[in-house]
Length: 305
Ligand SMILES: NC(=O)c1ccc[n+]([C@@H]2O[C@H](COP(=O)([O-])OP(=O)(O)OC[C@H]3O[C@@H](n4cnc5c(N)ncnc54)[C@H](OP(=O)(O)O)[C@@H]3O)[C@@H](O)[C@H]2O)c1
Image (cartoon, rainbow, N blue to C red):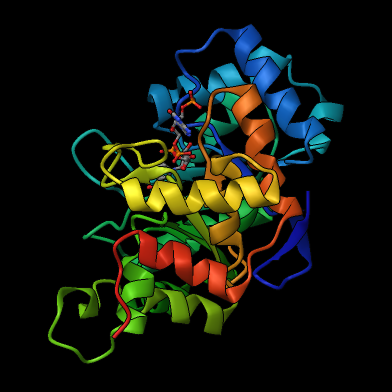
């Protein structure tokens, strides 16, 4: 498993991360097997959120492996806060309270990366700044980032927050490429030309913010998996053809396509299946040519101007 340098800051971790959003219904034995498979494959970065499984994902993660200081040291744990039942909340009080809850459930003294989960329309960046400073000074959080934010939202935050924003977690898969399409179809009167995210891809590259693509196998918003799906015949044919040629599974090809992008992104895979995870990790051993990357992009139904 190759390592990447998060935010070009000397913070190194596996280039593929395991997302823990779907683990809450698994048995402890299954979760433990998944986590140990990840570690054996070289994945040391685990993505959580306080809301996954209503807190159960964080709780069962540490419970299933019998979290110990030595196990904890082998891992980098990221979690998120800011989503409440019917609102988003980036207030100082909520951020501090949420982190304490995550620390308890994860049975740890510190979070490696804390992300603000979804933009809060009522954000007061001065409050976020105060919360981040308290969390950093107390040693509860080492690094800070955001999720689903556009460039101006990050600019607003960084006017007040003194810590670097090292991560922006965003939806990206071969069938969900809005942030790439807009850059290819500049100033045209077609739908892919619409810039829905304020050029977030280029912004993150400019600012050395690592993009973490979430749901890398899903089309739509959790509508399903595009691999082996009759809705995407041409795409699957191309992915399978390249996967066979390189001796990997189609899942590895889908992740290799993301890793080929020079923005050096860190995809967050959400499989709950240890065998599938092993297949996915092979993505780190292969590389795609420029032509292969574009062939997959076009097979997904995209067009070049
Ligand atoms: N920041 C945000 O707003 C946000 C939003 C959503 C997710 N996330 C993060 O991103 C992570 C990944 O999200 P995700 O779980 O939606 O991503 P994903 O990896 O695209 O999807 C995982 C799901 O797809 C299934 N799957 C994958 N390959 C398959 C195949 N070839 N055939 C059949 N099923 C297949 C998996 O089933 P198996 O379990 O059976 O393999 C699992 O149910 C989450 O865990 C979370 O950490 C963040």
